[in-house]
Amino acid sequence: MGGRGGSILARAEEEAADKFRQALQSRPDDPNNQNNLAYALAESGRNLDEALRLAESAMRAAPREPSYADTVAVIYLKKKLPDAALQTLENVGKSVPDNPTYLYHLALAQMDTGRKVEARATAALARKPSKSESAQIREALDRASR
Image 1: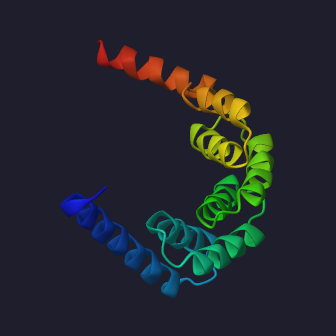
Image 2: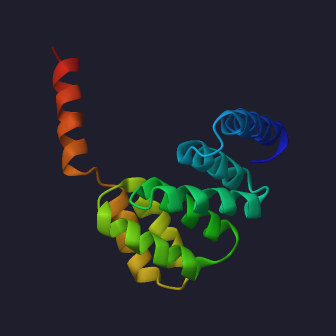
């Protein structure tokens, strides 16, 4: 995003990172705080080494939490390490096979490693809601139509 919209987005990302940094200062060993700041830094594209250190720390603290591994993989993608991202995301996919965000990130890693056919198939899966999301959508539509 360029121009003024880009500066507004950059400022919002910076403010989010500042808030996550404050939360981390109050509870430095909290893996959720570590992961939140790591993801904010990754999204802004700044301080990727710090972001990776924080995300890996969160992942070590809670190795079964897929969102932490996903953050590590996103940082790998930003650092142009698609093979590492792919390996991490394939492991995430085993525990959470129908999460659209994780599938999207997996498709990016597949694309960046030259696996374009797989990337297209994975991206198509990311566009479909899971069974539980489909049920929630139907329920919300039913409530809305009453």
